[in-house]
Image 1 (cartoon, one colour):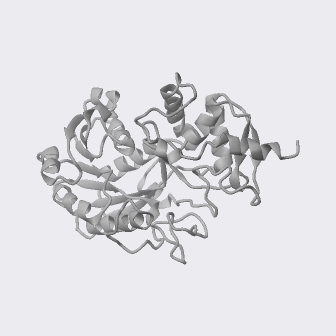
Image 2 (spheres, rainbow, N blue to C red):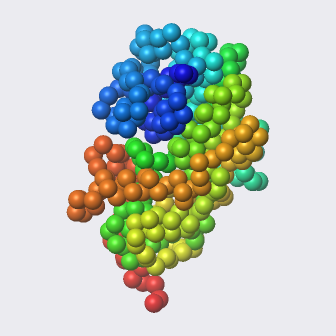
Image 3 (tube, helix red, strand yellow):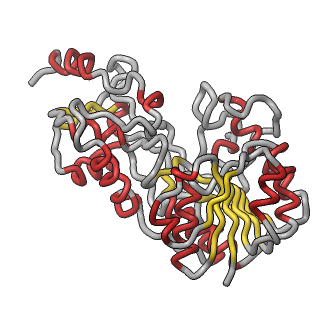
Length: 345
């Protein structure tokens, strides 16, 4: 029976990977800081929890035990953390590191977190240039992608079979920052009108945690040294996403598609990115990867989870364990209403 060690296994991607592998007959050990963050169904399916800080080599060695067939690191953010992973990776048959599309740069050096948005000619392939590796704070806008590049290079240069996955905007049940909340809350609040910046055309490729987990399993079964994008089979724009979520919540609204002359910040949703930023999934498909489903299919569980989490709240708000800070100033209904009242009927 193959065994997987999932570092950061109680998070969004880690729990999705654990669910998929356990359902396919694997055994799994997951690390985290708090055993209460391990979903009940994952524990019931047989996952073993080990308390371990990501930067504690002794705790990681203890979690690894005699080694694993598959090592998955969901929380590797720097070269230093990648170096801590190497002794475990040398014991594993296959290692997967979760990186990010934030590493990619366009011809002008712009990336996902730069002040000026990147401009790509089409879906980005794994051959696209990346930021130079860096060691600045990985929590900073400039440091996040640069540190991910540095971590990738440490692992890929080690000679062990490492698969680097570069997802886009990850979604799924259990997300600490559920971007879908932007539309779910508006639907639950029964907002009659939805303003959308850029006429709703902004597109930032979503990545379902369940689709990432499917790609992790393919990488585990075919070890190698490579890089894959990890995104959904479709890339809906903001307008399409808003309609999908409204339908799942059972609400309808009048859409107001804003032009460039609208007030700054009005209707800016988490997927607004112009020019669009999408990922090419051809390389993963060539390896035999098959996605679980498209965005509309894979987002259902998360939306239902969000609705259930806040069913009793009035006004509707996120439960305390989720990160409300991400949504500061994103629900200024008074500003929306003031602007909309000036529009011709």
